[in-house]
Image (cartoon, rainbow, N blue to C red):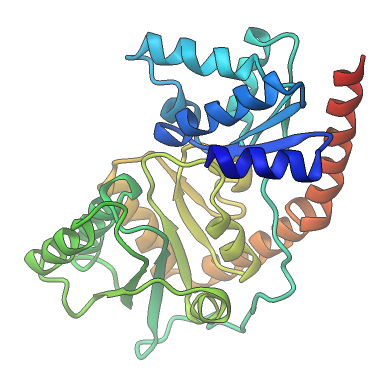
Length: 309
């Protein structure tokens, strides 16, 4: 990694280095590159792809000191959620800027979904991402088991993705079988590009019950597909979804409440339509790729000018 980084630096001689990182080993690994760029006097712009609690755990003061030491070697920091703006007073000499993720919405399919409750219609709930405990999949499976006891409409849950850790997907599939969800829940291999877009176009509800997040692209993709969303109030998700307007927000690790909110959407097609339409409008107005490019370009210029002065 270091060799390739140095080779690239001396090959293109950049005016600025933009490094994206997350928590744990990812941050430690990228810290090495930041220090190299600092030695070479190249301005660094650090982009954080995780939540505050994930990168700066309260139980590890030594790690926190290391995190902020590395941040102070940078000329600018991009954050994907407004919760990160609380670090600005700790880093008064470094510009911290909230620049949200964005997508090109044009490839995403918005189909005409059913507006009325029909006994023969099966409502399709979709989860797309890593399959693991940290993503709240066990909570989701527990919620689905509860829903079957009181939801009036027929529904299914499709889980599309691969394990976060070795064996996690197998363990969660076994848990689904233990709960008797074989006819309701289906696990699928990861899907990308057109297959992923088509999968979202076929769904009726998108769910993301994560315990921790940065600013998940899958939320933006679901919004672009006109899907109502049920997601946890973590990381940058509250910056993306307005509760009861473009989706429904819940606290993490609360399968009972997750079941309640999913059940509302399963049994209320008008609510699904309204939230989905609002979500599509919101992603086009606030999270379009052109807006992000403009913000990045302005921030690059600002960081370079500050580095020269």
